[in-house]
Image 1: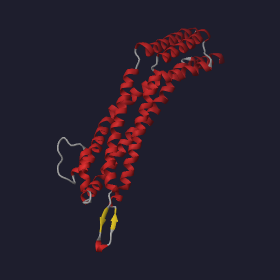
Image 2: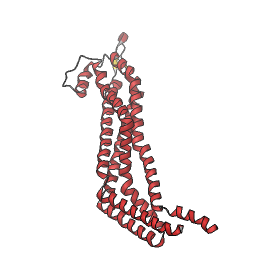
Image 3: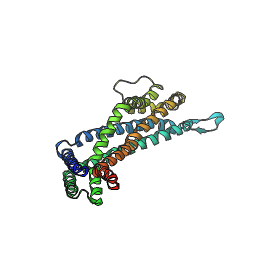
Length: 285
């Protein structure tokens, strides 16, 4: 009785899987919103990278400046900016991580394009139909066929689903913190320069301010005081941004990919394990 009931249920499950695969591949693909959200992440990473380079330019100029003095007729040259070396190294590492995050988002875009190709959709549907036919006729499919279907499902659906879930987590939990940290980093170069010279014009960018600031570098005390005063705040914002992008480009994608793999595996295995487990007590009786 239970075995006769399980066969219609399993076939209904197979039809449901076939419908889901067809709809996901052709009728309601998730590739377009996923691509838009990965592009948003790429823009954030590139914007943060540019802000890191701008901040590093100001600190590097201050660090590399030497001051010449001649006390008692003896020529002396010293570089007080070397005290900024740890901060400059932190900013360089921050910029390198932002570049790596940009590359990560770029790789996701490439994987999205591969998964969204029509050939991949045809291949997924064809392998799914073979798997359904094998399960329909014999109640089970070869292990290699199951593995092939799991892999194709991951290639076709895992990356866009992970991208959408990743962006959803960012918008709910990280967006405000990211904007606050980035705003502080973007304002830092101009705040340092503005603290050591007259007020700039409204149309003047940070590059023009640096060029106007360079001739005044021999009087560096106010510059170093301003940079050192802001260093702890910069370090805190930099660490926050690094943590956010590590979560978005490493931790969350791996976690969502693991969940997608488990779902694909459970989908391909289907109710077979439950059926076999329920039939064992019947055989023992």
